[in-house]
Amino acid sequence: GDSVTQTEGQVALSEEDFLTIHCNYSASGYPALFWYVQYPGEGPQFLFRASRDKEKGSSRGFEATYDKGTTSFHLRKASVQESDSAVYYCALGDNTGNYKYVFGAGTRLKVIA
Amino acid sequence: EAAVTQSPRNKVTVTGGNVTLSCRQTNSHNYMYWYRQDTGHGLRLIHYSYGAGNLQIGDVPDGYKATRTTQEDFFLLLELASPSQTSLYFCASSKTGGGGNTLYFGEGSRLIVV
Picture 1 (cartoon, helix red, strand yellow):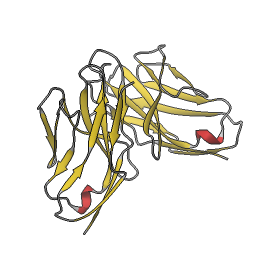
Picture 2 (spheres, chains in turn orange, red):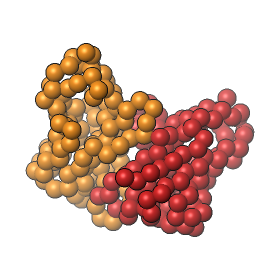
Picture 3 (cartoon, helix red, strand yellow):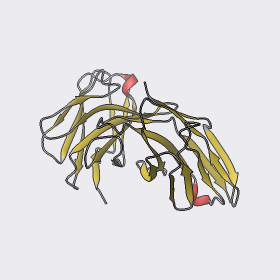
């Protein structure tokens, strides 16, 4: 079945550091790819998505590029702030009309001021 | 922006107890979902629905029932709660089905089964 792997369970950075969270997927077909962010005490919220190869999604300074060749959708930000501390989820969505979403296990980001 | 409201936000029950988690969305979305969130597993789909009276089985349905009474309201029922159901539960909605759609989540219901 479809799956999403986030390599890092936790990431600790200082403010203004560069962030990369790795996301790789396995899917039959051509899924949509998402990043969601979850702040403490809240539900996950949509960050951005990409639907086709080489498409870049971005929001709030975060970005990721859909790479079908390496089956990846890595999240990057050039300069993190303490307010970016949250859990980040990579997810894929079956684009064939199915309900199917598959979420990764999540990556907890802690940014130290 | 879609509004998804869950209640209760926190619940403690005993093993074998009865629990109902409620979810209401006010943005006229057709699809509603129940997920559980556990460390190391991310979000796992329990049940979902594409309209009033409809119920579809998700990936981890054992021990859970659900009912969609109206377009707005979706309930998750645990009739014989077990400690393994201690978790953080999220309701979500989306305008239509299909994995290309954005999910809108509620703030979560934390359930502890002792």
